[in-house]
Image (cartoon, rainbow over all chains, first blue to last red; front, side, top):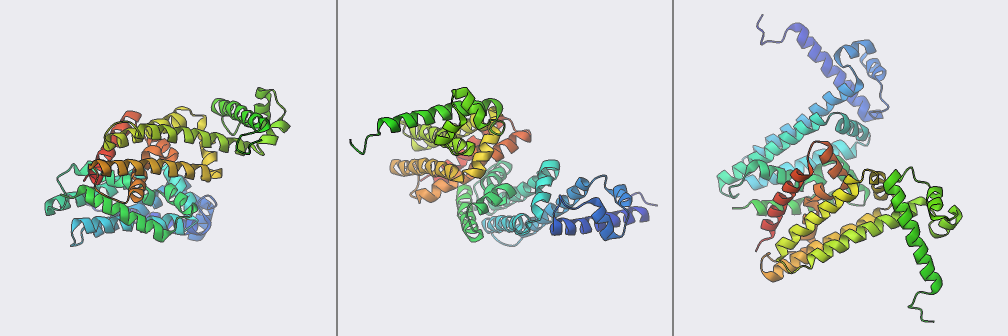
Length: 207
Length: 207
């Protein structure tokens, strides 16, 4: 058998992992990460807890897998938006709004997600870090495209991507976002302020 | 008696408030805000707790007064730096570095300050908000000076000040700052990145 094709056993294991993650994510969203137990997840799957532990040593490991796949989804969507046939500055604006909208949906609108996100940020910084790398790669690529289009001035695209990421943290960092909303900022007001920041960033990178 | 001059009673009350704040701040710094009790503060002052409660209804109210005066001190120093006989962009850079250095000193280097800051941010947002207003006023003033000097392009200085504040939160927000340092960033690396952000901001506002 080819070592490059997953065996039937590996395929079934991957399928079981996916089912565990799907059911766990639904429970985290419904009753919260802290209140969900591995026994709850097992019951909803018609499985024994021992069987879950064969795939994930802890509830935290399940959360890590869910967080990684959620964030990969957002990064993939940003990558797709960054590939649209539009001028680079417009794509940069669309990508940043998509990141903001995704964060609002994942971290704010679903109140039960809060403790799952909190746990992921404390326990699985590697997952967050990988996401930041992916997001900054999208920014760097858009800066490179803009330089090629002649709309952005030549610049160190990695350093520029870090500038964009840092300057927009208020709209993307779950803790800051929750803070803003707790202190009376509304979602439309935040979107308008994001637009003003994007204007400033685009002007700053202009040729 | 003139209604505009504080009476001797008022002067003595203000003096007592200052003594309570000084002793409380020393205790907060030494053993932490959560672990300090009003009884500890009273003992160090040679006062009864009941006497403290005549001036401050709660320990939280003492913390509010300390936080307000600490942050007013930082804002006053920024204002002084912003008044130096230097070009506006240089003053903007110096002001931002001073804010970063102050935050490092207050929030990071003194580990015991952490829970005091946390409590102030949760319980006395009004104090934080007043500080943000003062900081943005310094930024707006420097933008106006730069426009008058002809180095910055005419712009809405209040909106520009908000851009500067938002773009530099990583270096000024206690939670973000602690996060950065927890994830392996060093203080010199953070200062270098702040300089890169200031370069970008100055370029963005240039005439």
